[in-house]
Length: 463
Image 1 (cartoon, rainbow, N blue to C red):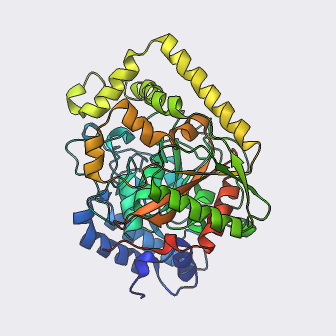
Image 2: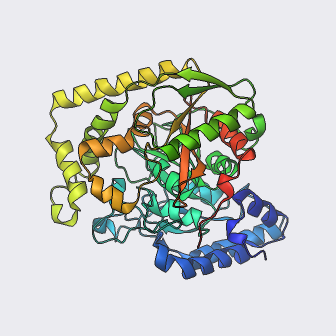
């Protein structure tokens, strides 16, 4: 067995499993051993289901021996964020109030992963209710590149585990940036699909009309494989659109020739590390055939500032059964969000809905002139925990961090986060490619072309 098995791509592991050069039990045992060694320090897993994973792996090996394959994930160990319901396994959504919640039915995305042959290793740690901070009683996951740095939220465990070789891919969710923040901070390829592309049935809500479920992987090709499994209409979620699911992995080599790449001329608050990553991406994507087009971004500041209110209203609905009735079991930050949402008037909500419609319209109008849009993930490329604490969590500082993420949750457009550089402290820096609604295939092809021309996605943390 290769020494660096844990860092093979999902695609490569699947091919070796299919060729019977590896068994799923061998691979699962290897990853479980790595989790046992590293996770006491990294804190990525909320719940590990080792016995169940090994039993599933043995069953899948028997299917392989009989000449049966369920598809490109057959026998591959992955993990899911702990807001995706898993039958018979606790799903806490980062909350002590739900630590004993054991669903009887899998979330649709989990059921689809299992049907495709994925081995589910367990549930990955996350912030309280998928908002901005971990519950005070829960130890946050540790950034494997540099423990002094933020791991990204809310899919913190998904980011840390996938970057550290504790799974070959993971699921995250994104309401204001929660796939993209941990992807950029951990050096991953994270896909926020178009809203409605992936079912949310059985996924604990933060704000239903803003929530997106998507893959967090180590390459665009791996993300394409996972998205192809979890995407599609679902009778349990009427908002999952009844569109055919493209062969994302089959079209990923489509290239960029002639595709218009929007380059914003009016970025604000972007530091030198983010700027350097963007410039490198422009050069690489242009070299792959993209045609740069200067564009002007809409003013996203109001949207980023008001995102918290919009999120708060829907979060208050999601927690109506337990908040404020059990307020003492909530962390102060999350409780403040729910209080905010409950305190807004009907007129306040009306203004928020009008703002959201405007933001979506402005993004649609911008994308009408280009095929793809390149933006930072964050203006400050990588936040240290100390710097984040010093900045505080005022409405303005949070909005500044959400400037290039939250508007695309409000509009529902798909985005792909890619590692595009490193800071002087050796922490990854991400870039973000935005696409037209339901053009995940286009942004994945762009991401793959970038990764064919660069090696940032091949760098690994110094564990």
